Length: 294
Image (cartoon, rainbow, N blue to C red; front, top):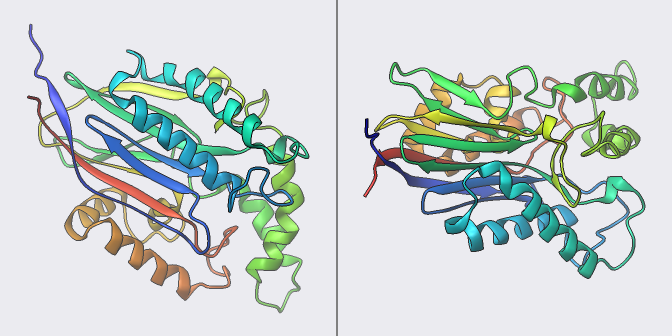
C-alpha cells in the first residue's frame, strides 16, 4: 500500500524579545522547522564575545540547522550528537575565559520537526511545545506534558522567594530573581547529567531526556511549534486552551498573539498573581499546515 506524501507549508513565524537580548530563534527550511529557546545566562557575564551566551548558542544551533536541513539523518534524533559536537567546538574556539562551572555552559530547550512521507517526526529537549490538530479538531501537545509546563519545577521556589519580600510587600521580580540565582545555578549544574535534565548544550544529553516520535498526519492538519515564553498564554495565564490558542494564532498571527501576551504580562507586572522568574520572557512560535507533497 502506497502512502500519500506530505510537505510542510509554513504560514507565519515570529520571535520577540521579552526585553533586552532575544535568546530565542525560530526557523524553517523546506519540510523542517524548529524553535530554539536559549537558557538565560546566570553566570558573571558572557563567556563568548556576545551580548549573551544564550543568544550566541541559539544562533549557533540555528545556523547549523539551516546549513544542513536538507541533509539531516534518517532518524531526526541523530542530529543531536553532531550539533552538540559543533557547538562544543565553537564554544571552545570562541571562549574568552573558562566557564566558572557547568552552570555557565550555554544551553537551550529546543524542538525540531520534519515532515517525511505520511508522517511528522519530532525531537525535543526541554520545554518547547508542538501542537498538532486532529481530524476531530482536538489539539494534541507533544514535546512536554501539561504537568511539566509553565515553570512547574520552579513554582515552590518562586513562592518561597516571593514570601521573603515580607508579608505585606508586593513581590519584586528583580529581588525574586536575585534570591533564585543560587537555586538556578544549582539546577543548571545538573544539565545533561543523571539525575538531572536534558537540553541542547555543549555536552550530549542522556537519551532518557530526549523526547522523539513519528506521528501520522493528514492533509490540512494545522500545527504550531513554540517556546515556553509563547506558551505562557496557556500554561501561566490560562488565557486560552490549546485548541483556542491554535485557532486564535492562525486567525490573528503570531505577532498579534505576542502583543496580547505582553499586555497580559504587564497587567501583572510584579508577578504577584502569576509567579514567574521573569515578568516577560522571549516568545517564539511558528505556524504550518500539512499539505500534499510535490
